[in-house]
Length: 186
Image 1 (tube, helix red, strand yellow):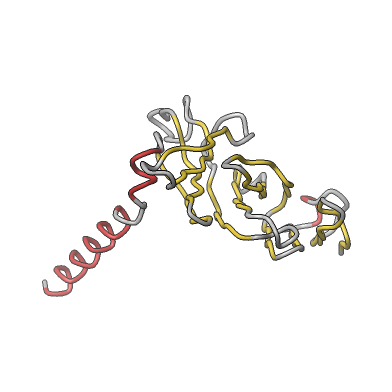
Image 2 (image 1 turned 60 degrees about the horizontal axis):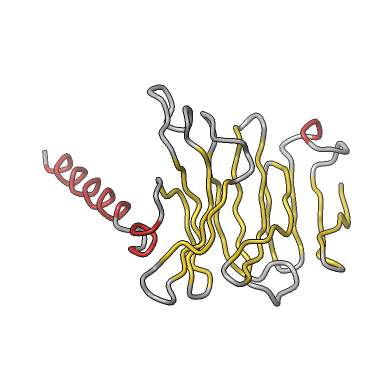
C-alpha cells in the first residue's frame, strides 16, 4: 500500500513538472501543441503541431508541423517568424527527435536546428536554420537515422547500408565556403 502511494506521488510530480516546463512566452504566443523548444539569444525557437489530428492518430488529419521564432523584445512576446516544416503535413509515426540552438555552421551566426523523424522505417531529416533580423533562412538539411551537429561539422549515420545514398554507414559534412560539403563517407 505504501509503495503504491509513493508511486502515485512520483507520477503526480512528473506530470506537473512536464506540463510546467513550456516557457510562458511560448504558451502565450504559439497557437498549437508545442513539441520542442530551445532558447536562442533573447528569443525562443519552437517546433509545434498546428491543426487537429484524427481519432486514430493525433498526427493525422489536418495536423501539420510548424516552427516559430518567439521574440521577447520588445514586449509583449510575439511570433517574429512562423512557417511550415517541409514535410507536407504530419502523419502517424512522426516524432521530433531533438531541437537545439547554437552557432553551428561558421561559428558567427545564431542558428537553430531540429531533427524530425518521418517514421522509424523512413528515417529522419535534420535541418539547420540561420536567424537574422527575426527571420529564418535555411542553411542545410541532412537525411539519415542519426545526425550529430557540431560547429562546422555534421555527422550523419545510417542503421544499415541500404538506407544510405552510396551504401555507406556514415557521412561527414564540413562547412566550407558558405555551405556544407560532403567531406568523407565510410
